[in-house]
Image (cartoon, rainbow, N blue to C red; front, side, top):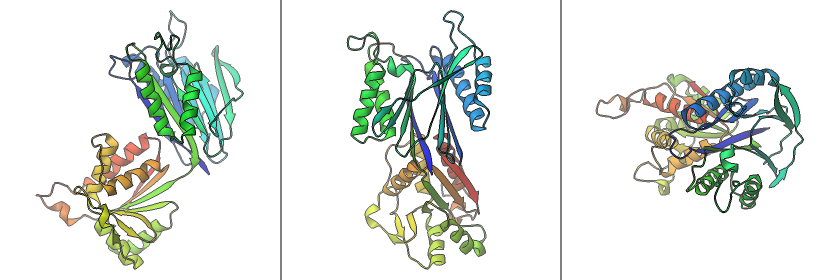
Length: 379
C-alpha cells in the first residue's frame, strides 16, 4: 500500500515577520489531505486568509465533503479584491485515498502544480467546473511508487522579477529544469523543497520579492515505527504487552534501560551495548534480535524533542538514529508505560514524574503537525 510523505519549506517577504502563504496537512490511515494557499499581498492579513482557506479545505476534504460543496463554502467566505477583481487567496488541494490508490487534485487560481514520474514531468489532463462563477480545475491520478507532486506559490515562479537575469521572474520552465537536475542526482524531496526556497531567497536578493512556499508530496510505501517507552504499570502484564508490541508491523524501538530489561526477561535475550556509539551527552545504544533500536530513555527523548523543535542542532548517536527513524516514518505508534521510575521522584533530580508523558505528547504533536499518523497508548 502506498502512502505519501509531505515536505514543505517557505520564506517570508522581506520585512515581514510572518509568511502570507500557508499549508495544512491531515493524515489518516486511509485518507490524506493537503492544501496550499497564497494570501493576496503579504504579512498578517495574507496569512490569516490563506490559513483560513487551507484549514477549511483540508478539514472538509479529509472528512469526505464533496468538492463542489467545499469550494462553494470557501469562495463564499473569501472576500474579493474590489480593485483587481480576484479572491484574497488562491488554493490547491490534494486528497489521496490509500486504499483505492486514487489521488484527486483541485486548483483555484493556483500558480504552480508539477507532477513527476521517473524524473520526468507528466502532463495531466484537467477538467473544469464552475463554482459561484469561478473556474475550478480538477484532475485524478493513480500514483505509483516514487511519484512526486510539487505545489508552489508564485513567490517561487516570480522570484528575481525585475533583475537582469530574470526580468519576468524565474519562471515555471526554469523550476522544472532545476527539479530534473536534482532528481537526476537523487536528491530527496525534503532537500529539494529546501533548495528551491533557498534559491528563491538568492534570486530575490536586492528586490522586495514575495512570500514563497514549496511543498512536495512523495508517494511511497507506508513505513511504520513502533516505540516502547517506559515499563508498564502492572508488572504481571509485562509479557502480554511485550508480545503485543512485537506482533505489530513495522520497526521496533525500545527507549529506557528498565524497559530494555523487561524485554530481556520476557524474550530471554540480552541487549548488546554498542560502545562505539557512546557520546558525552548520551549513553550507548543497544542491539537485540527482533528490535531495531534500543536507547536510553528520558535524556534521549529530550534531545529528540529539542531537535524537532529547533532548539538543538546536533544530536548524540542514539538520539540521531531515533530522530532519523521518526522522520522517515509515515505512521508512528507510541506504547508508554505508566510505571514511575523511582529516580524521577528524587527532589534533586531535574526530571519530574510526568516528564516522560509530556515528552511523548510534545514529540507526537510535532510529528502530527509534520503530517504523520501518530498514535499514543498507555499501559
